[in-house]
Amino acid sequence: MEDGIRVGLLLVATPQLEDPNFKRSVVLLVEHDMDGGTLGVVLNRPTEVPVDRVLPPWAELVTGPSVVFQGGPVALDNALALARLPGEDEPLGWRALEGGAEVSRVGLVDLEAPPGLLAAELLQLRVFAGYAGWSAGQLRTEIEEGAWYLVPAEAGDVFAPDPGRLWSDVLRRQGGDLAFVATYPEDPTLN
Image 1: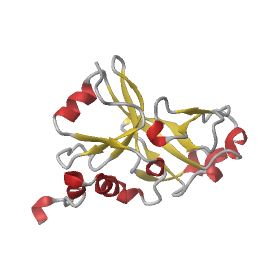
Image 2: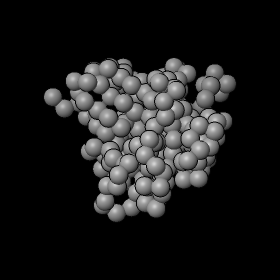
Image 3: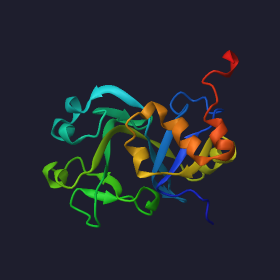
């Protein structure tokens, strides 16, 4: 049975989602298996930690801001990277997101590989500490309960130059009611 959730889509937190790990977050789905669960990375949580402090060999290849982003609350001591490449080749050290046509030419980088393998190919690169994960069926339940909007992604979302605006920018471009949600105040009691 198809659940509509697939790699390359975005989860956008609804205003009702109060969990501090995900409040106003935008999550790119990077793995999905209906039987095994779903994995994503939060795209709009830059930290203060410069990439050169944790992954010096990759620092000069990172798309600004050149800080590590908090990809989610799971495994914060592990890093993963997303990169966008031109052309059709799949060089060593990079794996396209399976079924991720919405974010074509965006894939996962093997941070254990020498950066020189990809340096000439990279258009954009961003490093994330941790990830967001859901067990089989958990994400579908959260969407049905109104915690998330499931919307198409664009390659630029992963490398947004102003991550603080990503939540409202993604909602605004959806049009209709979701564009209206983009104006929802951070604290509605102050309205």
